[in-house]
Amino acid sequence: MKELFKSILKSIGLYHPLQSWYRQMLFNKRLQQTRKLYANFRGEGYTCNICQQSYSRFVPDQPSPENKTAITKNEMIAGYGENILCPNCLSTARERLVVARLAEMDLTGKEVLHLSPEKNVYEFIEAKANVTTADLLPGFYRTIDGLVRKEDATSFSFDNASFDIIIANHILEHIPADILAMKEIYRVLKPGGKAILQVPYSEKLTATQEMPGINDPARQSALFGQKDHVRNYALTDYVSRLQNSGFIVSVIPYSALAAYYTNAIQENECFFEIEKPVSA
Image (cartoon, rainbow, N blue to C red):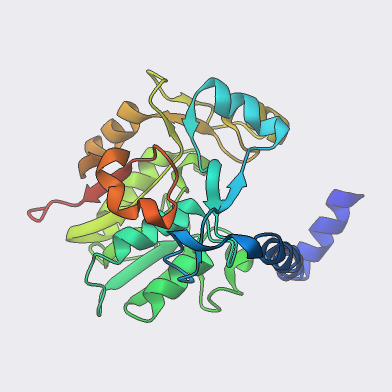
């Protein structure tokens, strides 16, 4: 009955707007609760580079029981830990890392493609650059950008060399044909352009674990730590996939990101510096 009702809502165009409204309602409720709970922690310590508020501690975020085993067993760097959520705006550590890197770029007049756009990241770049947002299910993102396009990351409708910067933050682990998506991102990126393609990864794994054709949320949680993930990337393999797709890749270790520690980025997460060769 639940699936039938969902199908009806989708057929009349109401499913995604209602889902977006419900998610926003839950977010607003949690935000008010968190601000009240952490009011006594206002002060020096960490400063959110999105809302600019400072607290001596941020909000921890741990995986749910059904996801925890896969993340813990494989030692995944997957966005969980201490000081993950800003108490004032609930921005995530992974959003703050991306914003910290973007803040060092000249975004003025740049053409940016933002896939599955996060509200905080989108609002940071939208005032400076020309931003195109896109997702396979754009209805979930219309409250962020009413002009969001429907696009398949494995087969974009964009021309070659269309964008200076492409952001797909924690997206590739959801895509069965991730290498096709990497090659499409490479194709539509301008020579010398940069891609921000952070993913959950493990330094413990010697090979990426994946089941591209899986469609079993419970099993995906058990295997990959989230009900809609299809793989756990091994760090070295992820870099190799990007390089084989044509990118120049540098792994910036957490120890070299000390300037961002005050923004409460996730402990031990590296940053993937990804660029299309100028000569491409």
